Amino acid sequence: MADQEKQYIIVHSAKYETTYTKKYLNRKVWEEPNFNLIKSYIPGTIIDVLVKEGQVLKGGDSIIVLEAMKMYNDVQMPFKGKILKINIEKGQKIPKNFVMIEIEPMV
Amino acid sequence: MSLKRSILDLRKRKDEVRLGGGEEAIEKQAAMGKLTARERILAIVDEGSFHEYDMFVEHAGTDFDMGNKVLAGDGVVIGTGTIYGSPVCLFAQDFTVAGGSLGLSHARKITKIMDHALKMRVPLIGINDSGGARIQEGVNSLAGYGEIFFRNTLSSGVIPQISVILGPCAGGAVYSPALTDFVFVVENISKMFITGPAVIKSVLGEDISMEALGGARVHAEITGNAHFYALSEKECFEQIKTLITYIPWNNTQKAKSFPPQEPKTKLKIENIVPADARMPYDIRDIIKSITDASEFFEIMELFAANIVIGFGRMNGETVGFVANQPMVLAGVLDCDSSDKAARFIRYCNAFNIPIITLEDMPGYLPGVDQEHAGVIRHGAKILYSYSEATVPKITVIIRKAYGGGYIAMNSRHLRADFVFAWPTAEIAVMGPEGAANIVFRKEIAEAANPEAMRQQKIQEYKDKFANPYVAASKGYIDEVIEPQETRKILLHALQISTHKDVPAPAKKHGLPPF
Image (cartoon, rainbow over all chains, first blue to last red; front, top):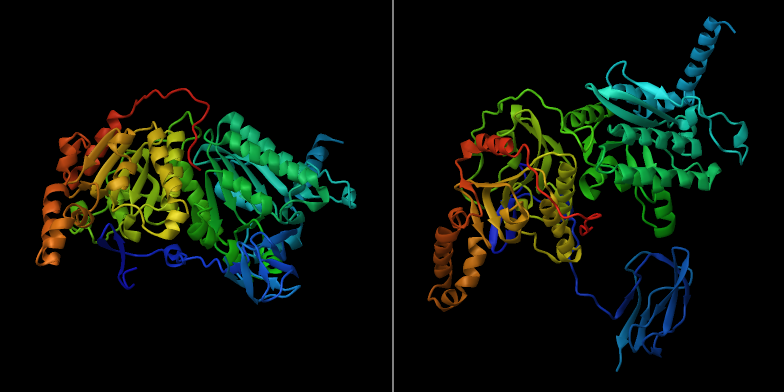
């Protein structure tokens, strides 16, 4: 550890010299969630895309069928809005947190 | 058959079983750097002490043409032996026989030796090296696992349970080790996961090797599933034998006493700790300057290294140490370190091992990841474990004891028996920097030179509160001691606590926040 660069942790305004753990260095940095991006909450396969770009839908309308863990999951509009962009197609395998559809909220 | 012939026949039968899956399978095992199941047991127990049972048990499979197959001992070795004279029950899965797969008879052999260990109140050591459930035996395999998990739980806190992962241990099989007290892993040999790389790749598209997913290092450093990490099976067996010397046979006994020894280290205890509370040092140097022969047997060395746990001896008796580690993440409490310490405290309490707490920590680790990972409920585990523990509990505050951390680290308020502090101790609601910013906010903001005023106020707060004497004036600490007196005072406190007896309200069990 001696030849490492000095590392610090700040707790209650005091700066302590110390070393980081691998887990600390790899921790996830929090980001403000963007509710206009419909992301996959689980990795899976797109069974069906039920909407088209430009379409206006209300909250709760089904937009995608995503198969994951042997289950057909119904992905819905979180609120009333317009479909801006569709980044997926039928049969596509997607990882977790993949931006499937971008929407624009409407009142 | 004459007696001589029947003896020869018996020997032949035993030799056949001892050959396990045959020469070829044994060679394959050796090529992977692995010993066979029996070799492993013999490497752990005292020479000539091992007795094997159920050698002639046959497997119970009838479907898929299994009826005609012979599986030596059904892929598992069970028996009893001694380690430095202490009795133990053992089982070892034999990977050379049907990949160590677990069928009904295999499981029954394991549960038989588990029942025996619990009945005899002696430690259980399980060596895992198995491909998993024997698919041909279907739900009988699952039943077998369930019976094992149930016994792990029943024995928990009664007899020490040790799991050694010396091969694959995947799917449901991982839950037996997870339910035991100590898990040993070996680099390149141990593999533990619920879902393997092949399935993860086909379902999720994530490409990861077995080693990177669930290898020894991963479990020792990242997941916290393993307590001891070794580079070879030989090193692992030495670790197991050492552990056995520190723990009792069961929860009604004390660990074995050894002849008392003075610390070996020439380190001067007062030279280890920098005066500046913001500078790091290795808390293990303090532990080693206190313990008999300067020996410290660290547990979970790589996981949550911001807290150090392990066994040492004081005047020949086993003691559990819990110590903040300023060298790593400034010694803060966080989700992982709370989890690690809490489980160890409960282990010590269950097995009559006094706990010495060495404190030097600035508080809890700030961050969204920590808050969202549940640092509240994880942190609460430390409070719970210390409060619940009735074994002798002694705290030495070395430097910083701030805020919630001060309360959590076996404070007087959680029923510590003795709380000592070095003159360098700073016992306060938070560090001087943070406190000055809040208490003197107005003065600092209105000053002509706010930074100079801030420094002045920090110094004022430091002089007044960053010491052990405020807490001492309220009786929250029992004595302010000179660093070089630490061992002597700890020995005295331990001696006074020998027959400690505190009543607890009757209950079925508590509800720790896990």
